[in-house]
Image (cartoon, rainbow, N blue to C red):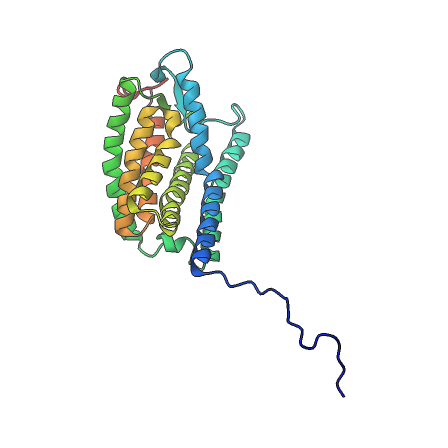
Length: 278
């Protein structure tokens, strides 16, 4: 004879939640991507854009014209103490690359092969170098002319690409700084950001504008000319990345541009009349 425990015939009142519909899952995924993208930018170039805006506001409200003020890109951290200065320089370069490592980690976690999915690898070195050099040649000549015109018109500060002491590590640090700038900017503001905006459903035109305006924004500390010139560069780089599907040639192009700018200024400043100095 069975034992009645008082539950026979009683309906279960345990609520079973329905499975989320596909649209809910998609929206959850988009919310995660939005948060991730904002955090990556807040740790890197988004923060730089806010800093540049504050700096530009200070320059505008300072007595005198913009061209009478200077924006130094690579300066000394410990004047008169070269070994300590070198330690700070290397520390700054290394820590600036951490957001790129974070992007690689995030891409790997989503199942992508890290930065390789962005075309940042060594599978096509000759192809990447050739296209990078061509882009650098075109952008570099036009960019220099635009900077000189913008400064002469009073729209730009005097850009000082380097103000390092004359020590043995000066040019190696300038090269490392140029490569670091190129890797951080092109991996994050170009390849990673476009991938995330595509995943969020942005149109190609909207993504192009977002990437280009962001690039111009974190150069605003140089003045209006720095903002406009880098925004135009951003448009060119987005179009090239969309066409090639690889960010490596654009990293190379950016690195070459900065190496020539930093090293050229170090060699020519004060020796040629057409190069502005503070």
